[in-house]
Amino acid sequence: MAQGNPPSAIPVILPVYSPMTSPIPVTVLTGFLGAGKTTVLNRLLAARTGERIAIVENEFGAVSIDSDLIAPQAATVVELANGCICCSVRGELSVALIELLARRERGELAFDRLLIETTGLADPGPIVQTFFWEEVLRERFCLDGVVTLIDVCHAARQLDDEAVAAAQVAYADWLILTKTDLASADALPERLRRINARAEILDVRELDRHWAQLLDTGAFSLNERGVVPSLWAQKTLRAQPVFAADAGRRSWDDAIRSLVLSCQSSLDLGAISAFVDQLVEAHANDLLRYKGILAIAGEDRRLVFQGVHRIAGFDYGRQWVAGEPRESRIVLIGRNLPEEALRIAFDAARNAC
Image 1 (cartoon, one colour):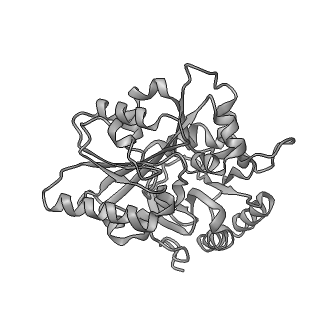
Image 2 (cartoon, rainbow, N blue to C red):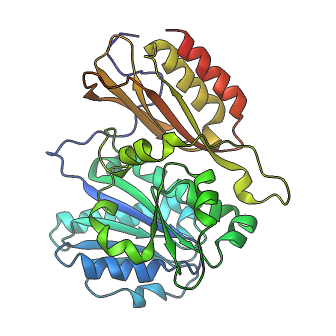
């Protein structure tokens, strides 16, 4: 493996977009049943009146309901009926998105952004992967971020009883607390951060001040812009979440935890590449989201990587600033991951330099 090149052992599927390609940004809006997704979507449309937004919304059942509730300023609404998106993600969703592109190219439809509103029963994972598995979608769309709404009145019970509710939290880049005028959310953020230490948590009452950030997250691009880096610096690295479950009743979110691996020294490129390669090979099915910023020995640039399950990519980012600590840090969000074994393996990679 040549020094100075990103590791090649991991499938480099995540695209690195240049301004010339002008991909269409995509936001996935998810959240369990009754969390308020359509209400938030209409607030977005009202706030971004100068932007043409295409909506793909999903109905669970044969009769459309939500599309009649979406404000008319959306560029178009494509309905996916008879089942949640995650159940038909390799079929109907891809077909709908390709048809949207075709209509755009024929001049029949103009839109600048795509927003997918999932049913409350959808796991966002397969939806996210669609934008990287399908070549035409990978080239023409840029997945920007996943926004998950959390109903504070019912979140505790949902996280106890529903696996998909915990998965929606795990995939999120933003966690928006809804119905905060009806119930206290004091204990909820700590529980959410155990599942996902890297997501920004925001009260829905503050949402109108944050649309620009929320729609320009850059969470799936191999660079360090957007909300994620500032979140790491301010929040994620101050805590060391672990996978150990609390005593008492076992809930679905006991299985999903965030783990932060970090070190203050430069890493050997081959050793850390082997670590990530083994991580993906052994735990890809249970790795929901993962991302790292690494200091590589003999390299002036920061090495950035991220992935979803087996879809992963590396690229070099900005140079380290003189005097800046060359700290490497990896955030893993996964289901039933062996925390102690991963720490030992990371320590071995760290000590190889």
